[in-house]
Length: 306
Image (tube, rainbow, N blue to C red):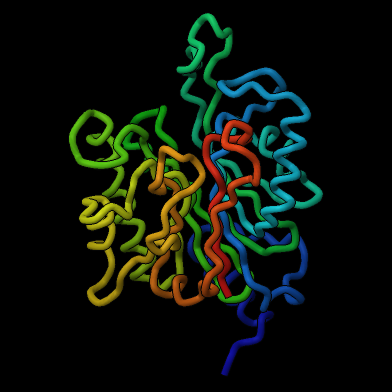
């Protein structure tokens, strides 16, 4: 017999409290318990808190455009990357519509010149954080950040971990892995990224042992769908025999940037979460304007779960 939404939520709250997490209810979820859950990932390219700062300096019309794209994307949960602060996130994911959850990683203090423009450009690197924007009214619990994903380097991003309690609970880990190792396994950047993979393996193993439906989504900086990719292979080895991970893109090619036909942003699901994906619901939100006018160097990707 299917559990009632009230009973299910109560059970989830008890479980989360037992695991040391803090459940949160922003509004009664019962009316939307059966509604699909749209989850998305969006690297927002140096989203700064203040106009004219950061490696992609923006003005208020730029933030207004991002708010408009957010409304069109219409996701229930967005994992975002490269956002300076909660205040920066809330310039796009406004508090009347979303609750923002930010990584607790301390600022590394590294604020050198931006790669593009250098000292002559007058712009400096701002803090880059991972976080969630969760539609108001959706019950969720904050789990401890996956600090180990920083592998001891203060410049590397931690994972942000939440459990969403609309319908059947699903645990979501937001990530932004080391850049510079999109394929292959050689080079300094690859050494770092391959140090992060066992951290993800352990997180996957723990969720599989619990029987928890989960997804890992974000900017992986990795072409996981390339044939024989060793990172994808290692992630799969963390799953119990007979159970496999699924990339929500399902082999589709990326269209956001013409010169990059392969995704480096991914939504990776365990079998329980993958079974809830609405057929044909995966989307790449490509803004509907020429590439030169994109508000970020990444396009959001999203999928709907029943």
